[in-house]
Length: 194
Image (cartoon, rainbow, N blue to C red; front, side, top):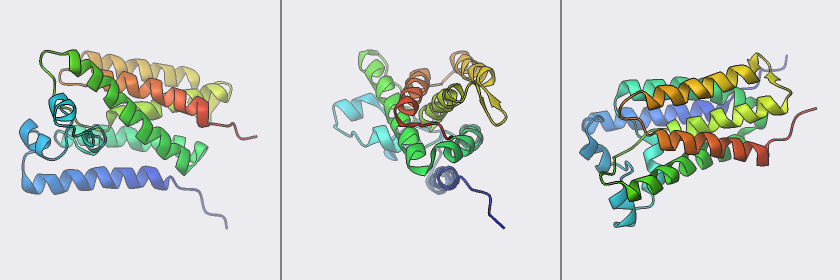
């Protein structure tokens, strides 16, 4: 009997994000910006003036509180599972990490011109990248991929961006940068299965 394929990278990313969160909670308050800065959160002066470029990457694995983590991991599970099974592990990881980094760079560019740069962390830029990539994959498959429709994906992207803009403390530029870069990376990497 043939085993059903599993989205191993999606599961691994959820486990890594959860592990980082729970380890950090042993040592401090993940809702405290200073504590998060000490552990790799993104902050424009530290990156530009301090040359701590690694923060553009490390901040993708940090979350401000349990609800921030849970919201992101639920979306990562739903989007990642569908996308990884369709495009494969390597392409999935390229899109996830590439979108997260690209989203953070877009946010960083804005923060350079901002009077009050923000401390930011979270996987949402990468997750929005999965959303953008899945949107392209659905479009490439004539508007349907299993139970996922093109219209449903467009509504999901629009609602997710809307909720970001109407909520406080959300890094909307990372979301926009993520969804656009995820879409572009999928255009470059995805080949429809026949």
